[in-house]
Image (cartoon, rainbow, N blue to C red; front, side, top):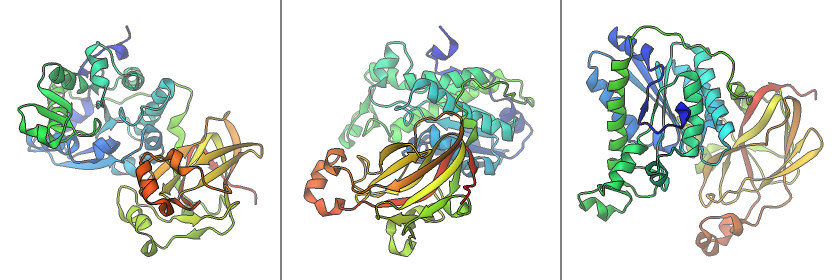
Length: 411
């Protein structure tokens, strides 16, 4: 059995030598928390940050909340500069076990590798720790002595680069097995003497986040005891995978207008006229600069790049429609921007399937009509009660995401 297949609460590997060296020296410390909604919400992130402050009172700590709900390691690799790197952190926790559940294992390994390589290209003395949350159904996998597929995929990257990983799911599974924990409970269950871990099977409530905090705290004690606390430059060497996620980029469309081609009647949305756009422009987590809107079939944006895939970061809602992607003037893919969760406005993104590495030109065009939204929406009762709400074939554009390098179109 490989080390990354083994079920352990803590895998020390090369540890966190630079982090503890700086603490020993009394230097100021910045900790970034990179992940999805479980990281973004108040809970283990704030809990562990407070633990660090109490444990090391002579050190000044700064926290960076780099959690974005509903996103995985694929978007994280593209947003790393604006979410993490600009703050020059000393330690980065990475949490994507929950949101990476839909990808192929080798791809997930590559995406996490891309994040690691970007971090260490910027600063080889930055330390990293992988953190694996747990969701409904996964306690059974753990009690059978196995890791989840996503955890194993991520752990391949951790093992290859010597990054410590913490798996609090083992503690959660043990408490549930002993009858001390209810994984999916209700508010009334909190009156019992059992720990209620979550209400939805994904996002911990106070008791669940406390478990996460306690597990990290005891693992940090072990990590500190295991290291020599002296400077250690992390070496990258050859990549583990072929996917090249260290080359992921994200660009605000308003910053690259001289490199892309927009045709049709696209209009910049005035945030005062759209509560959705205003929200995502003002929220520091998203900080969208501008949002373009159109519902005219055939309106398009054309982008050229050198790499393996491209996508868009957009906004969606009940009125969202469909795009057609024309790849290198030949292959066309229908892309539905109305998702099962678009009963309300939300940020979203997509990548096209992988292409052979090289120069590619992709045109995204608004399709002639929306999809059968009732067949897609999760809350069909809302569709039946408010059918007019779902009319429309609108596309909102904000950013371009690329696995490669943006190139200028010869217009």
